Image (cartoon, rainbow, N blue to C red):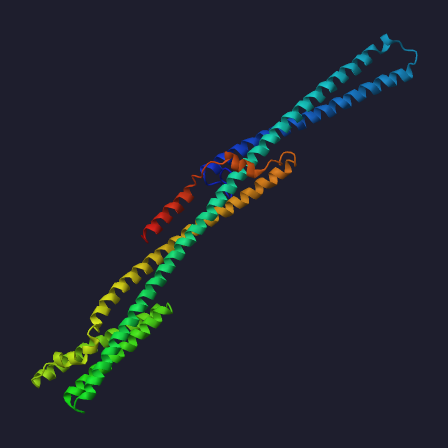
Length: 361
C-alpha cells in the first residue's frame, strides 16, 4: 500500500502532494524490487562459492590420496573446479549488476523524496500564510467592533452633554419662577428626567468603552425609559400651561436660548445609526469567528499532516545515506521543482478570505 498517497493516517491533500507521493512510492517499490534482486543474487553467489569450495576440496582430497595421479586422472575434478569458478564469476557479475541497479534506484528514490519534501515545505508555508491571513481577518473584525463601540460611546457622551445642558437650563428657568408654582414644578420635573437621561447615557457610553454589551443594553433600556418619562413630563407641562393660557414651547425656548443646538432627537438619530453599524459589525465578527474556527482547524490539520509526512520522508532520505541526501532542498524549491499550489483547502481558505474582506468594504 502506498504509505502517503492515500488510505493512511495522514494522506496527501493537494494534487501536487498526491503526485509527488505517488512518484516517491513508485520509486520505493522499484528500490524494494532491486533489493530483492540483490538479495537473490547474493544467495546465488554464496551458493556458487560453497560449490566451488567443495569442488576444490574434492580435487585436493583426491590428489592427497593419489599423489601419482596424472592430469587425465583428475580431469573431471579439474573441470568441475573450472566450471564452478566460471559459475561463481557469473554470479558475482550478476550481483554487481544488481548492486548497480539498486544504487541507481536509491538515487532516484532520494530525488523523489527531496521533491516531495520540497512540495510539503512549500505547502506548509502556504498553510502558515493562510493561518496568518485568517487571524488577520478575524482581528480586523474585532477591531471594527471596537471602533463601532467607540463611535457609539462618543455619541452617548455627546448625548449626555446635550441633555445635561437641557437639565441645567430647565433647572435655572424653574428657579427664576415662583417657588412651588405649577410652572416651576413642571420645569423641575422635566429637569430631573433630563438629568436621569444624562446619567443613563453616560453610563451606556462607559459600558461601551469597557466593551460590556450587557451593561450597555441595560443602560440603553434605562435611557429609553427616561426619554419616555421626559415625553410624559413635557406633555403634562404643555397641558398645564395651556390650562393657564400659556405656551410651554415659548417658555422653554427662553430657557434654551443659550443652547439653541441642544436637541436630543438629533443625538438619538445619530445613536440609532451608530447602533446599526455596531450590530452589523458584531454580526460579521460572529460569522467570521465561526468560519475562522472551521478554516483554522482545517488548515492546522493539513499542516500537521504535512509535518508528519515530511518527517517520515526525511527519515527515509537519511536512511539512504549522506551521499544520496546531500542535495539542497532549497535548490529544488528555487529551481522551480515546486509548482504553484492548487491546494483545494487553500483555495477554500482564499475564497473565504475574499468573502471576509468583502464584508468590510
